[in-house]
Length: 136
Image (tube, rainbow, N blue to C red):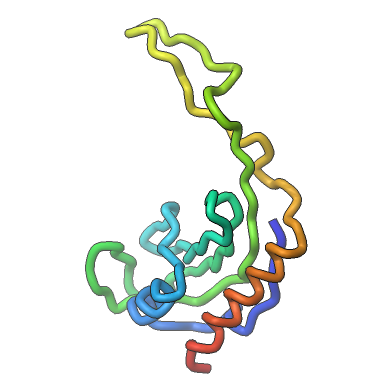
């Protein structure tokens, strides 16, 4: 993980407006969101292993991924992360007793792999796109 300085950090924004504007630039609401926090994520590579993440906390209201909300959010420090996963079945897979099903989901090979400079540059470029659309 590598943090990236941003003019968004600490700023508040309308959640619905930002979600819509960010979606037009390739961002999605991260899967780990909760009613009081979350992140907007943008894949930087085709394999979806390198991501730009903009975390946020809810300062007013509650999140709902399905419908409009009056929530306001405050952005945290954006960062780039890279996850390198094993290809194919997990070599440490084990059989379960009931049904003898294989546990085939692999753990990350390196959940915090080194991030090459060109991905950091790409993340900065993408972040500038989002910063440019946000009113100060």
